[in-house]
Length: 423
Image (cartoon, rainbow, N blue to C red; front, top):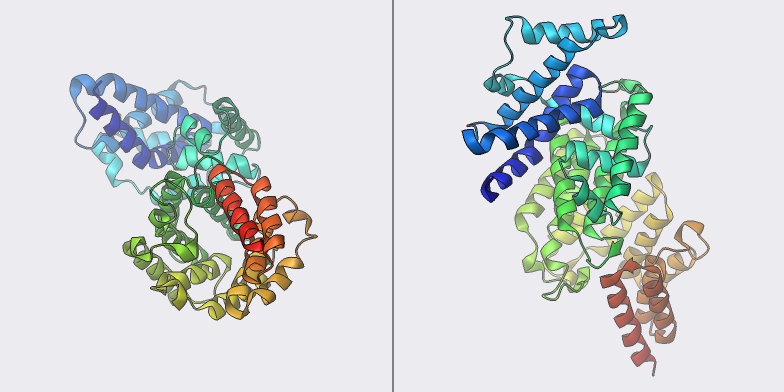
């Protein structure tokens, strides 16, 4: 098979896999089996496309092939009484004329609900957060297991076992392939949003490894968020999260220099920010306003990001508004990390002493004991106050705590600068 054909098939799979697996899961009521059937269709494409050529609509071809395999399975499966009722309606609807579905028929079927159901299943609370992230990237994102393993710096075998266990857990828990009812919707949607948010954050500021960022993860999270916004257009926090990711992603090209070294927000060349992504983010934030009901945690963070996006120069940033938005965020979603971010905003708006007072109050927080950004923030505030020896110690402590090599280099350099200033 030519390299071009491989690339075509990879691209089609990334775009169509969630729809295909979702449609199959609706038929067979088993996410793991649905993925196997979809993979079988992919193998068939690898066998047939080199000789027959790429179909006019490769996504529809894969869908139809996978459904044919599912129908063959259902025909030959012993139809126990407990499963017959659940499966018969699907078989009858597909076989009412005795013929398998044509490839083009896949285009006429509603797919939105299937993808949305697949998201909710992959992010089911019965799974650990790590398993939800892995399964979402695999099932909904269409990423290969080695790619996910590399992104999160875990061995491929470990990641593969995590996905296998997740699918087994869903099967054993008999998680239905359906949207949750009104009573569960809020909690389940929160889980979906949290997973997408975690994926984006890991791409935006990698927790470990030699790279400051992993843009591919940001792109994948954005893709998932945009899909969710299309499927759940009336949910304000979905648009809030999309707005946040669009605006944050606009800075990616400016966050490193030519050598790949980190460039902090206030030092970035804002002409390198992606104005299209900023406009998309601001438009998503406008949708939050149009829907009404106030801002949730993601929309508030998006509003903070918008303050930076609207400032043509760092000196034009509306820090008092950002501090006020962090005050609001601390009220509805209190956490030590939010409070630490509030310390930065207050320090910028009202002086480093005010920010340091907030940061100092966090030194005994157990959740921040090994969090490198606490000494990093304290070091920055101390340096602005001219307390360079103390700042140097804080930067050194932060460098020792971070697991990201690029960030360690940055913090070590800041410690050196503070040490020089202290002499």
